Structures are given as C-alpha cells and as structure tokens.
Image 1 (cartoon, helix red, strand yellow):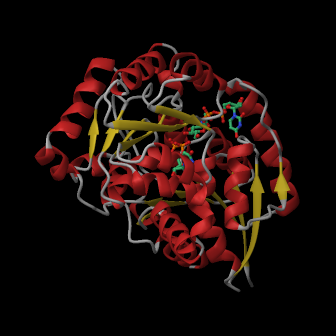
Image 2 (image 1 turned 90 degrees about the horizontal axis):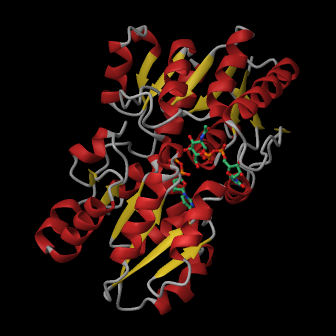
Length: 371
Ligand code: UD1
Ligand code: UDP
C-alpha cells in the first residue's frame, strides 16, 4: 500500500529545501503525498510555492505582523495537530529548525506518528546563536524516527547525542537539488530571472555585493552594526550593494532608516528564488547571516562573509568559501575590504565546493521513506 506522507513547512527556506522532496514524492506511486503549509511566512512562502508549482492541501495561514514566538508556537501546534487528525499520515516530514518544523514534529510525536527530519544534526553548540533555532533542531532531534543528515559532520553530531545510529542517514542537503532545479529552469527560460536587468545596468562596471540579514539574535545592536558596515563599504566607488530586505519589520525598520537613498545601495523587496540565484551569480561576494545562503554560495564558488558569531555549517568554512565575521561593523568592513582589494585572498575563497550535497538528496530521502 502506498505510504501517506505529510510534508509540513511554513517559511521561505523550508519551502526551498522541501520542494524537491515534494516533487519526488508526487511523481512516485509508492507514496500519497500531502502538503500542509503553516503560512508562518506569507509573501516569502508564496513566492516559492508559485515557482515550484506546489498547491498545498492545507494552509494554516498563521502569520501575524511581528508575531511573538510563544503565540506563533501555540497557533502552529494546535493548527498542525488538527491537520494530522484529518490526514493520519504514515510519516510527517519537517525540515530544519524553524518554529513550524519544531511544532510539526511535536504534534506528530503527540500522535505517535513517525517524524522524518530533513537537514538533521546541524549544531552550533550555542543555544543563543542562532536563537531560537539551535533549540528547535535539538528538540526535533529527540523525537525524529529518521534523521536525514546533510553531511557526515551533522551525522556525527547526532551520534554524539546518542541518537540511535540506525535512524541516521547522510543524504546531502536538498538545497543543492533546489539550486540545480532552478538553475535548469533559468537556462530554459532566462526571463524567469530577468528582473534585475535595471539594477545590473545601473551598477554596470561596479562589483556587486549581495546582502541578506534576518537573524533574531542580531535584532537591535547587531542589525545597527550590519547597517553601519554596509554604509561604510558603500562609500567605495567601485562597488554596489544589492540587499533584498527580509519582510520582518525588525529588519526593515533599521535598514530603511539607515540605508535608504544611498547611491551604491539598492534596498529591494525579497527576491523570488530564480532572481536570488541570479543575484548569487552576478555578485562578487555575499554578506549574510542566512543559513541557506551559506550552503548555496560555496556551491557557486562565491565567497561568503557570515555575519554571525557561530555557525552550524562549518563545512563552508572548512572548504574556505565561507568566513565567520561576526557583527562588529569594523570587522565586517575590514574583511570585505580585504577580499575586494587583495586578488589572491579573493581567489583563495572563490572556489566552487559542494560540501552540502550532490543534488540527489530528495531521491535518497524518498527511498528512505519508502523503505
Ligand atoms: C523565521 C524562522 C527562522 C528562519 C527565517 C527564514 C522561526 C522562529 N524563525 O524567522 O529560523 O531562518 O524564518 O527567513 O521559526 N513577515 C512578513 N512576510 C513574510 C515573512 C515574514 O510580513 O513573508 C514578517 C511578519 O511580520 C512576521 C515576521 O516577519 O511576523 C517574523 O516572521 P517569523 O517567521 O516569526 O520569523 P523570521 O524572523 O522570519
Ligand atoms: N532567498 C530568496 N530570496 C531572497 C533571499 C533569500 O529566495 O531575497 C533564499 C536563499 O537562496 C536561500 C533561502 O532563501 O535558499 C534562505 O532563506 P533565509 O535566509 O530567509 O533563511 P535561513 O536559511 O537563514 O533559515
């Protein structure tokens, strides 16, 4: 009998990393695939659903402006629980470390439904960085029946926590599947990523620096420092910074107040995935506090300066494509300047590596769910 799989997600990065699995499950008669989106993100989730052609069977639409973590968690837990009672799946699939993923796993556990955790075993070792994600993923790790670790490092972290080794599999990270899928789409339909043409013309002859930032632990002082660093880097005549600003009001208020109207800085709306991949393609380097961007940039050979104190993705740092620079403005400026002015330092970082996967992770995970 076909296995009933309920895939639960709610934010942009979960949608990007789960659409390859949803595609794999939908085209496979070993499964009945159902999708529940929580709508933890609205606009940024819908951008991915549209590109990936996914029409969820359930949409909890939980997003509220600037929602608190406890109110969000409560709504997610009860909402997902009700969907599980209707669907009664054989497996619940969650991804990563968001509130949606943690609540999806907990609601399934309460019903004794096995949980498959995609991107299992990432650990920074610091429960405040990233916050609250380090705890969310540890909680999921205590409940999952199948841990799909993207790398051997992640699998080893789970073994150190005494997770049953028989439940741990190294699958690679589905973000690489997503990247390959969207790159192929852009190759066949370039207009899907053509919307940056005006900015590309405006900044012709300058080196592009892509920026993203949204981490909760950076709100306040950290965001101010990041804005300060961007303003200082933008005083150089030979660079332009393109910054698709996350829809979180705690990010937007600071960035708009600090960076609006600067000649060399384009604050733009969040890009859909093909356009973001185009930005990765045209940029010289990335400044980011994102998790996903730390995985994509090495795959494309783009140096990435990680504006965080710790990372749960040491593979990019070990490969030499990512460097942790914290949220001190002077350090961010110094590290960016070094890469812009020292061709050898740049060349050492700008090498394509694929520590996070080979683009076949979704198929491996589907086979594990069937087994
Ligand atoms: C969430 C995840 C974080 C993940 C990030 C990816 C949690 C606790 N945090 O953080 O792990 O790295 O998503 O981006 O799960 N908003 C909109 N429209 C959107 C999205 C967000 O308006 O499409 C605004 C809303 O006011 C919302 C706020 O952003 O209340 C915060 O969203 P939330 O999902 O709570 O947290 P993020 O900071 O986005
Ligand atoms: N991304 C996107 N548009 C943007 C910024 C990011 O499509 O304007 C993609 C990016 O390629 C990556 C993911 O969103 O796959 C990362 O999401 P985010 O930084 O919000 O979350 P995190 O990965 O830190 O959890």
